[in-house]
Image 1 (cartoon, rainbow, N blue to C red):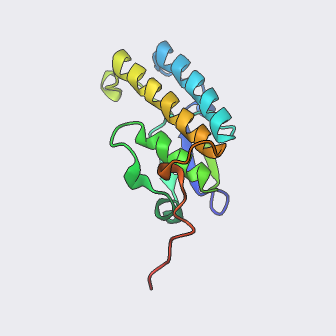
Image 2 (cartoon, rainbow, N blue to C red):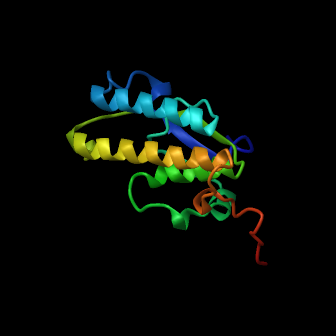
Amino acid sequence: MEGQADVVLGSRLKSGSPIAQGMPWWKYVANRVLTRLENWAFGLDLSEYHTGYRAFRREVLEGVNFLLDSDSFIFDQEIIGQAVSAGFRISEIAVPTRYFPEASSASFSASTVYGIKIITMLFWFSLHRMGLRRSRRFDSLRARYTKLT
């Protein structure tokens, strides 16, 4: 992806059926619904956002205000929203999936709270993007960043 993307996500959905590989059906359904909402809000066409496989160019981390993000799982989605808002290029690659009892600690109730937080974040992102309510979280630091030599 050298030179083609600033952020790369690893997609479990591009490498086969996550359900066949052991993903619980309710996590799969929630993943699909949230991904649709995120694609709509972010203006992207990714197969999934809820992956632990992520790579960022240094310029992305220097150009977004990630210190305003939460310290929970939703951080991953907030930083994607910030990267989109700052105009960084986002892409994905296929990654293998393996599920086993120790692989996922997120219960149904924790996953539900996570989903609600994602939807709330997408609401605030959309208001910011439409210019209806500014959010410092989604303001780019790129224009203010000066490289020290």
